[in-house]
Length: 229
Image (cartoon, rainbow, N blue to C red):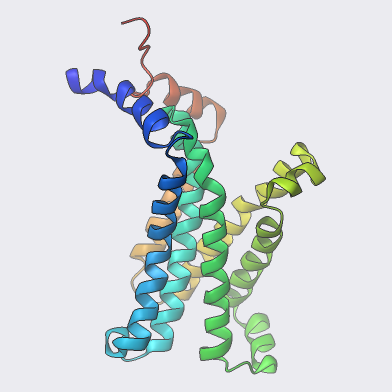
């Protein structure tokens, strides 16, 4: 019981002391480094340890970048439900960074496909998009990410207005679905990760459903009434 009772205090400590304005720059620097780490590992392997990339290094690089694109999209989508459930409001400060990292990994994933898989043969690329559904949905998903990345700054929020900006950024839901579908159709044998991604996305969408959101918040062990104790 004592452990449960301490959770609201822990959430408040994380929100105020760890992620609050006084230490937010340090926390963002740490998150930035963690987000950059998978890319750094790939770069290190390419330069210093190519054998670690397996028999088909190009495929390994393309797949790894695609996986991390989806992971960052899902982590970014988790911010809002986690914020609501735990009461750690400063989590919102990291959502933009996570979204931009998803776009960065998605961009490099696309470039790796164009360079390594198709050698910038644009005719073959167009045929790929037309004939292979998983390429088409992946390309559409990336295209939907572009306006979100461009309009992610505070200045664009002011230009578009809060309502229009929020409406535009709802594109994150269909584009994440398409990214997961792209991965699902791409995999030929082991569907473990596509299934994990699909389940996580389904849970994140369910957590946004108002009755479920209210239920989770009402029964959250992180938000018991501290003041009344």
